[in-house]
Image (cartoon, rainbow, N blue to C red):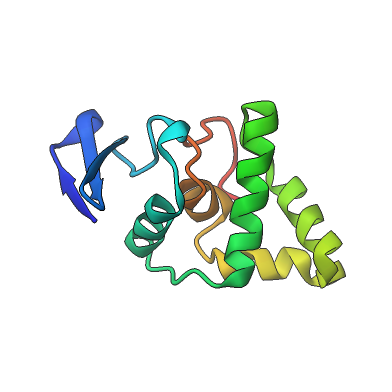
Length: 120
């Protein structure tokens, strides 16, 4: 991944394609997301994506495609719980994304930065 430009007009280059990101590295257009973009965004966050990361990311993308809004963290936790993690789902989510759901999970899943949410 490479960045080009400064401020609001930033881009990342993923497999030769230019993808617009905001000043914080979130996609400007969630429609630009694909798994290669996710890998590049994860790398920028110091994450190596494992199976459980993809469970969360794919859930988030499906939720977004259906509702055109990023899922609140409680929905991601519920999804992990339903996937067999039970009461450990919340802790696991924050093990997967140690700097927070908004900072890392939303970014890697290609969401715009949710402005009104806490960083939880």
